[in-house]
Length: 150
Image 1: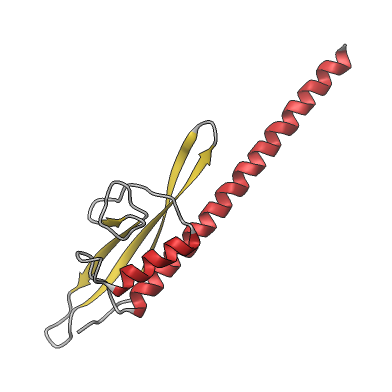
Image 2 (image 1 turned 90 degrees about the vertical axis):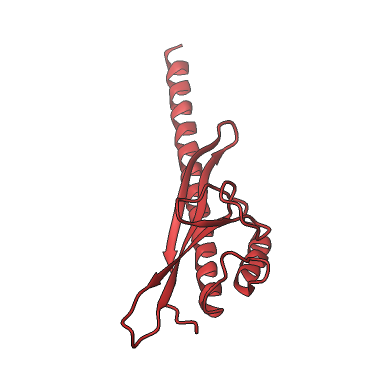
């Protein structure tokens, strides 16, 4: 009887380690996907030399981002921090259920040089367990280079 109880404990410990390893791998894969989405958003904004954040339907950078999100099957959403404009997977402004958030910051220069701006991007990823649903929400942030759009 003693060996049967010891085998049960060992079996439970192995199951716990397998679950921890699987959770770590899922979190790593989600982080990698969010990091790729963030980089693609930044490249799209830099390629178009900025984005019109208040008119996403007419902006080519936002349209390019939305088409990439559909191709990549990125479905994680979150709430945008204060000062950011959030967009859902359809490219519409939605700060409560956003797939990504963008904030434009204008840097003031001297009178001789034009004002330049950069964009800060926030993308979400999460640890989602089948029984507990969303356990933790995380963010990945990044900045574009300075953009001078006349």
